[in-house]
Image (cartoon, rainbow, N blue to C red; front, top):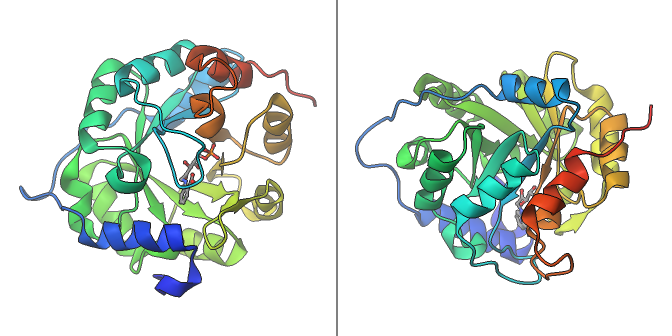
Length: 262
Ligand SMILES: O=C(O)c1ccccc1NCC(=O)[C@H](O)[C@H](O)COP(=O)(O)O
């Protein structure tokens, strides 16, 4: 399933090359006592909030700027704004993240923390403790094996897909949390119709996350109407360009308190 390098945008090719060469854990398999993701989503729903996974994303290949703020302060502000969980980019070269940033975030908040990275082999699971990790179907050769290895360590696993074929691969491998990425990693174009096209084919017992390109309360309504159990939001909360005065709590609250249309 691993993509050949020329099937993705140059920035993503560069991310993958860096991932291939990046450090692995050196002390053998880690064991994680993880915070329940499903309980966090349920708590948000019970409190009348839209379940949002807010992402600490200092920069990215498609961001307008770079935020240097302390990651733990950012994450605490996101939780104050009602985030059900936090995602932390740990990729250093293209996203300005680090495993240390994730550890600091996990110490600072009590909600589940997702490690957002481009994991391509088992030993890369052993770099830092997190409650969830991301596996991207198009970049992983042995999804079933990596999924099992992650679960053996205690991680919950968000399996990312972009189309129906990748969804089938994820389901065959036994994924129970699936994210549909609205960002096409071949072209780096975002289209919310991606989620709307894939979501109807996801079984009810799978936790379904809409990822990327969600900026406004209207987008929230649209993704929830299409079946999203939770939304993963980075740029609109981080506001790299400073359009909203960079108020992280308010940016998060605007989405978590969206009145949903039935
Ligand atoms: O965000 C990017 O520019 C990007 C480029 C290449 C590969 C991955 C990329 N993003 C990773 C993500 O998964 C997003 O950070 C996440 O889904 C949040 O997206 P958004 O709300 O659109 O920032």
